[in-house]
Length: 198
Image (tube, rainbow, N blue to C red; front, side):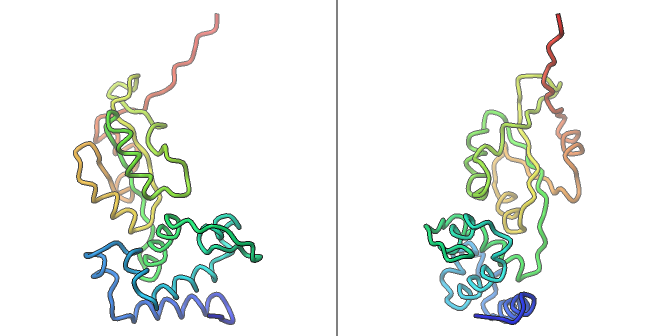
């Protein structure tokens, strides 16, 4: 679908998705949004139009992964995980749901399991979400927990917040920043020890 301007196209898509009688919020109870959207031909077409209108916010490599073709027509393999990720971004945009900040603390002995959960969403970055910010009660090794701050879509925040494990704790970054979360948890960031000069 072609539009005279990007603004006109985006407005048309948002109105079309809002007027769709199949509420995404209701459909989400049965399945994830990206599964729901692939099952609806009209919504799938709206997503493809949105990708085309927003194409200049992506690198050529990202656009190939999302559409199978970049800005200049170079073709390549689609990455379904990245498409699913941007479906959530797209649906949140149509529903007017802003991005959110999640502050996440995980127990150190569950670092690999936590990274496995994060990797389901972190399709653009690396797979080691937890491991860089080591935490302990006294701020010294060994780490008893790891933490991260995640600027994510509203749907991604919902996914992270619904992980029901005692070793996985999510805080709303709009209410508590990282330092406040650490104080609440009774943790301090581990600082690397500086070697004394001889």
